[in-house]
Every structure is written in structure tokens, then in C-alpha cells.
Image (cartoon, rainbow over all chains, first blue to last red; front, side, top):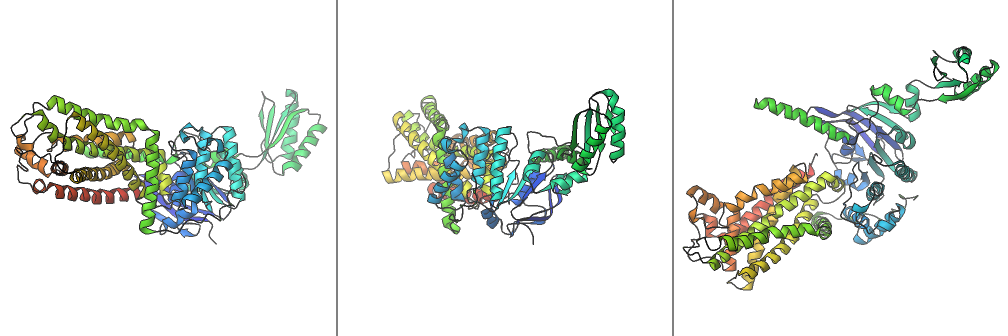
Length: 340
Length: 287
């Protein structure tokens, strides 16, 4: 059975840039898909297509079982969208913003008002409810934006970089809200540049680059693919390095790398915690005193680097912006040639 | 904050469709834009300063020099001028609508609206309705200033009111042009200048400020077919401000012979064409 969000072969070009180049997605009901990728990868474009804001050049998409291309208005009743740029009217109060959105979701004025009150309290905006959104902090605006997306408690939610630009405390708060939401049964597609965020929130992760899905799976699966765990040991004295090396060579799965200056040895392993205990016993038996030992698993950063060949950089602007800018530049270049 | 999703079942969106939904959604958006106006009153005030300045400057600077049907009596010019200034003022709604919509695009609000199950044209209709309210307020104040500097009407109140309605219809039509401009440009600043720049030739190559009699023949044709001139002439007629020495038409253009009807036709035509284009652009606003 296809998931709450299901897309096949999505293609969208802006000028010469293929923002989406045959993207397939499937998000089972009640789960979170993290769409991970650098700027210009096509994350925002994918969200815009799935939320009826943009028509793909080709491909099909279903959200909550409804055909996005054939019945966009029915899809709009079933989704909530929380954008990269907090889309609230800054000259309206928090309450006015939520009431307006509620009415435009076709609630009666009375229901919209009641719902706005409930959401403002839930999102800790009760005290600021009757101040214009202009006076809100960045974190408050994001919460208001998220509340606006939840006015009718849609079964499917899209969040485009929900925590970009937020400080750690506000990010943590927003993560808690998102976890609650998913616990309540909402299906969520989340785009992010923060690997930590995908790691924490997403059941499944799609890594996307240059408009293509280059890897998918759970966070653990992706990490395993990158080349598994390794053990790092820091010995107490430099003359212990050689003894430690022989222990690690015997128990590890590959070459031991040594950093003399920090007395740190690293070796790839398989066998996890059990092996770690063995290593500690053997080092002890050899009389090696250790300052630190740890089993390191690859982070999503490592995954990302090995998959895309470049690190996940974080910039201020959204990926579509840069794709568009690129497209414009090439259009400009063309028209200049034409005039010549 | 738990169970955010669970308390929703009571909130079933009203089943509504067609015209009721369009009207309701448009009014919700109009209300939003009117609330914004009360929060940014300086925009309304700045919108008033320019037309008031024009009334005062034209009346006292040009008033004694411009010949209206062979007479340079300043009182004649005042009565000739006001319909022109009023008409020019209502067309400035174009820039307001354009800048407002471009700003909404820029801030991501249009994306929010487009992701909601609302009537398609409502964001734009709501905006143009709110602008109509602002234009009405501006006209009321401006008419007061005009009366103070000596403008007088010579028809009954019903006709005078019809004159103002004719002007407002033109303003409403022009705000749809503004909506299209706002959706087509990238920044609010571009929408403001793009919305204003073409209004100057449009409003000056017309019968608004001087009789077309003194223009080169080519410009006389342009001026008399200019939709803007039809409204000015129509309003003059309804205000009783037509001048005995100024011919209705120099080139014999049909709109000048039937200015009221022509003005309504022009305005409705502009609304139909630009509303269609703007709503289509909004739907596909593939930012």
C-alpha cells in the first residue's frame, strides 16, 4: 500500500537546472521522512511540488491518497505547511494570524477563534497572543508558523527546514513539539540541512543531491553503509603506543592509525561493545594505561561526506533560491549572447 | 503540548463551494489587509499627501495661467481640474496593490495562502477590495480639501455621488493591474516604482489637467481614447464641471461623446482582462 506521501519520478527544471531529476519518495503513514541535502539539492522544490505550490514537469505524487496534480484543492485540505521563512503576517497579532488561517481552511469564524486560542496556549504564545507578530522573537515566529500549519490538525505535514536559524534552545523546543505531533499520528516530511535533526526526528532518511535521491534508509542503515564503527584509544604515555598498536591490530578489522602527538590510536572494528570490553582487558593485561577509550559510530556528517563528496554546508538561503539564481544567471548569459 | 493532533475531530471544515466560498475568503483577506492599514497608518497618510499637494499646487500655481475655453479665470480651472486630480489619485491604488502583493510573495505569505484550501482568486480580490476602501477614504478627504480651495459642483447630490462611484470603479480596475504587476516582479520596491512610472504618461496625456485642444493632433487622438480621459470627462459631467468653452471632443472620439458609458465599459474591460491574467499568474506563481 502506498504511503501517506508517495511520489514517483518527479522532475522539475528551472532553466538549465534540474532541481528535481527523477525523485521517488514514500512515507508510510505516521512516520517521519527526513529529506537531507545541501543547498540547491532540490529539497524545497520537492516540498513545493508535494504541497501543490509547483507543478512538476513530469512524475506523479499522492498525498493522503489524493492525486496532487489532479485534485490539488483536496490535498490542501489534508496538509499543513510550515516554511523555511516563517510565513506569518507580521502586522497581525498571533491570534489574528491563526484566526485568518483557520477561516481560510474553511472553519467557521467561531471555530477558527476557538482553535486559535487553543493553539496559542499550546505553543506558549498565550501572553503574546495580542501583540503583532513583528514584536516576536525568531523562535516565537517559528512556533506561530507551525501553529498556523496545525490549525486543522492535518494528517500530513510538511516542514521545510523548520529550525534553520534558530538558537539551540528554540530548536530543542521545536523538536519537542514535532515529536509530540508525530506521537499523535501525523505523517511528516521534513527537510533539513542539520544531520543531527534528521538523526533525532526521522524514521527514514532520504539523502538528496543535484535533484536525485542518492541514498535512503534509516539513520543506522546509512551509517552502516558508510563503513562501520571504529575504536579510538588514547594512551597515557608515548612509550605505550607500540604495545597498544599490537593489541588493536590483533582485535581490529584493519589498519591502525596513530597520531603520535595526542597518543591516539584508531582502528576499524566490528562487534561493538563486546569487542570494546575485550580490547580493554587485553590492554590492561599488557600494562597499557589508557586515558580515554571509545567506540565511535559514524555520524550522519560522515555519511553525507562519503555520499556527496562534500560536507553539508549551512547557508542562509534556501536551496531553491540558489537553483533559481543559477537558472537566472544562465538565462541572462543566453540573452546576452542573443543580443550580440 | 501533547496531543496537538488529537483534539481536531470537532473541527470539520465547512463544506462550501462556489461563489459563497469566494466571497467569504475574499472578505477574510480584505479584513486582514484593512487591519494591516490600521497598523501602518503612515502608509495611508503618505497616500493622501501627494494628491493634496497636487490640488493645492495646480490650483494656485497653474490656476491663473491655464486657459479654459478662452478664459484664465482661476475658478474655472479649479472646477475643470478636480475631476482630473481625483481620477489620478484613484489610479495610484495600482502601486499600493502591487507593492502589497509583491511584499506578500517576498515574505512567503502567498505560499501559505496557496497551500490553503481557499478560493483561488480570494487573495487578490481581498487585496483589491481593501485598496478600494483606502481609495474611498482618500477621495473623501481629497474632496474636502477641494471644497476648501473653492471647488464647486453644479449637479444634484445623486449625480455627484455617481461621479465618485465612476472614479472608484476606475480605481478598482487599476488595482487589478497593480495586482498583476505585484505578482510579476521580484521585490516590493520594484512593484512600487513599476506601478507608478507608467501612470504619469497615462494621466498626463489626457484631458485631466489641461484641455486637449492645445496638444499636437497625434496626442489628441491618444488622449481622447485614453480610458483615463473617459472617466475624467464622465466625472466632470456628473459633477456639472463641464466648461462651455471646451468642446466635448476635438477628434470626435466616441468615448468623449459618451464619457460615462465609455468609462464604465473601459473599467469593466480592464477588470475582466487583468483579473483573469492576475488570477492565472497567482495560480501558477512558480516563484
